Image 1: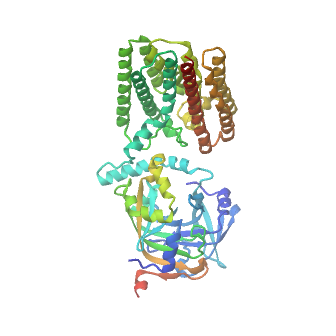
Image 2: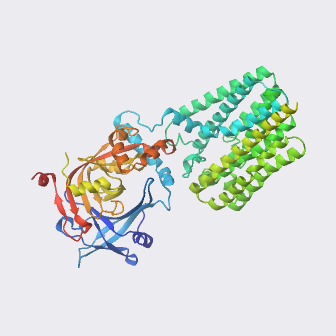
Length: 452
Length: 161
């Protein structure tokens, strides 16, 4: 508990009154509100003496003085939550005043430490309390979530869109090249999704074991991992079992697809995908810890996913799906890139040297713009070279969104919680470009069918 | 049934924040601003396991007090009161027991809680909670909130008399 200094007294001056509390002789705390003035130089609070023997502030024991404030916001709860409490001793009252000499202070102001960060910093207390409660009760008491929410949280299911887009795009490119099997397409989608979820879960395991997730006190819905281990919603053993089950499912489907198509190229693509996914956080490579996470993600969710889906349908590699995979890979990598910005302090503490840990804010912000514009440039060049169908230029409609995100990153770089909206928009950019590329391919297919 | 004076019950019914004073391990008072709920007999407060040190203090020293003093948190009322009592921590099942015991009272005072509860997945530990049930034993009331005047003191016995 910090010693009182002038800043605490200045902070107390923000409150219109204080509540003075002490433990009475009968063992009950007793509290009374009163007005006050501060003397910062002497670290003293001059309290107006409350009337009556029943609330006479004692001088022979520690007294607590607290100022607290909230602002009710109808329909939304309240904000501006803050409080500051001081401990010290009082002098005998004189002329209706009691001098309180403050010694220790403790408080919280959500303008300085946002509620979510305050909560994250308190997670060890929750675990300690529940461990103690379990010991007292003679049974394990741990936090819970309903099964649906637990699955969603553990696997980070909403991020599956990063897999669905390249797989569908690979299937559409193959369709444009005259190859399509609906069952193979569904199996590809299922296998790729299981692989993505398996990698999400295994990354969580390695990030928790490395201490990166625990060191991060600013997780958001887009960053900081699932936290199911940190919160003790699942045990390490359970999470490892989930990861193995997902890997087994993905591997089985991958081998089935190799057996059906007889494509060794597909086998190598599958092996490369799993290797990149695991090496992303797992030792010895730990790519994301070395600032190579974006490249791994761009490869995994770009060429590997898209070419894999294409090869399942056609049995061969081609230049067009590779070119189409580049903007998709870049934009998924940019999701990671932006999501790493609020994580950078925790990541640095855990030795996770991501790009935002290594590079200054201006470079990271400028790098976003360059990479996003490069993704759009690849589409333009691809169309100009006759590799991509011209309707894929529809994706350029998302350029203003990318520019808006760039501005948002610059403005909210140092504020994890206001950056959250930017991170959400960045996910939407990936969805929008993916949808427009899919729409472009759909339009090209329709046009060629009509002209046939 | 309860014995608290009607004006104090009125304060409890509207209060968004009350200062819960508990006794720490070294015998010092520690104060926690919390939302008080009232069922006509007991004052209920509650705590996430995230901020559960107060629960440990109460289990060691169950005597507590609740101060209702901030006109902003009392929806404009300038009356003030302090309720002393004995607290019991109810924590058999922090996941759902509090919903059975106090969610309806909480919802009545702060309807927005339902929308937060629907987002339980976002902050699961916040909704792992213990209930603090306080049996009032003595009440000090300052009509108009002026503590330079003597408080009106009541107890269950004085109310019965």
